[in-house]
Length: 115
Image 1 (cartoon, rainbow, N blue to C red):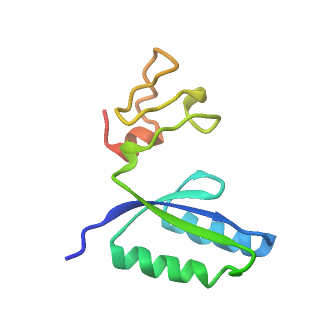
Image 2: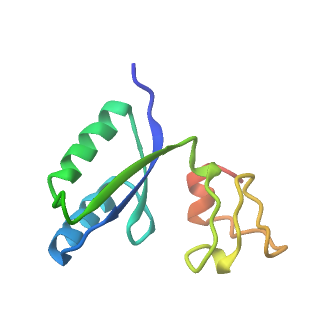
């Protein structure tokens, strides 16, 4: 049986209508990390089917769609406005910019299962 893995899906869509369709479809599938970057969990067959479906929403010569396998959400380094007051979150889950602990009910903690 194919075990689920984690993937970052990123896209660059030229036309607003196609962009909205792509974004809506991926919002149902995973978690938005940025406006055009999503974190999803799927088996290899599942991610292949999803990528085929997403490819049907885009124009091959104008748009770009990519999926990057990652070990898990706790392997992502984050920095910026969408991340707990601009802190740098490293794979060990520690906040490298501020000395305080991130909120206990944050989406990052729920996602990674860290306490």
